[in-house]
Image: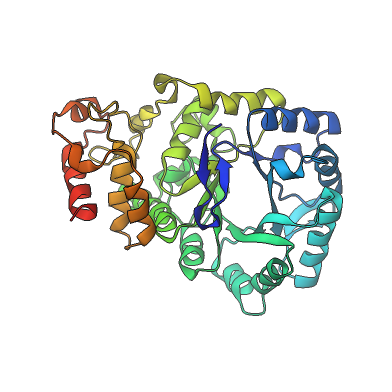
Length: 382
């Protein structure tokens, strides 16, 4: 496993995590097999948003005596309605389900307490109001029942507002190349709607720019992104899907982990085999990770835009071109000391560039790599 800092929490998280959504009604045996596969592979971040008692009990049993090995993310605002998971903004009811989660998980705290599913202005105002769920989350953190506060959602503008508010440490957000072609105000359901990909009045560059701005803002404010829905609910595996993009699990994880601000990806896994397929990313070749086929989708106008994919590597002088360009780009979204610190720890600085041009020849997106590296020198090595 490889690890990244989860934003300003300072905690090391495995770049591959586990989303438990598809295990809600699975047997204990299946849950055990998936979690064992995950932990054996070095996974140490598990997101468990569901309110169903069965899945909470199963994870409590499976993780007993293993609690120290994992960060657990639970959601404040996820409740049951007629046996189905839904969201609530009733503070007493939400806290009841939070207490239930701790009891069933056999623990006395959560690592990340997510403000659940905030996707529109009305929900945002209710959750982040001084008397809303945020106040409950802050109190629970003060009581030692949660270490960090996060938010989950799908709407770019609401996510940007939360990140810039300073209230959250972690953002859980869908990151995949199909979703990234859609306008920021569309919901997750839009992924399956072909008309969404011909959204009237919206250009590809606008939708891509909106989401890139969010990812960069997270990097600037040191808010760690937990990337959910990396497979776009499996849509990206299906030939003829509305986005016209077909990728493998490894390619999907490679794309998500190349986005600025992303610290870990939590694919939903139904079986141990699916968990193993996600963990295969860790040993995959560069060719297997290559997601440049997304440029064949006419909605992606990627020529000239760095995707931080590092297809331009290896650099003869060992510059990490993707990381260097990402940091220089992020500066444009607002200065931050942590960006300079990240640059300082790079083993080879941009000024080492000899302008040999090998990177330009390799880039599948026709990026002027040398110009980007020169910009990094100007930004960080004044």
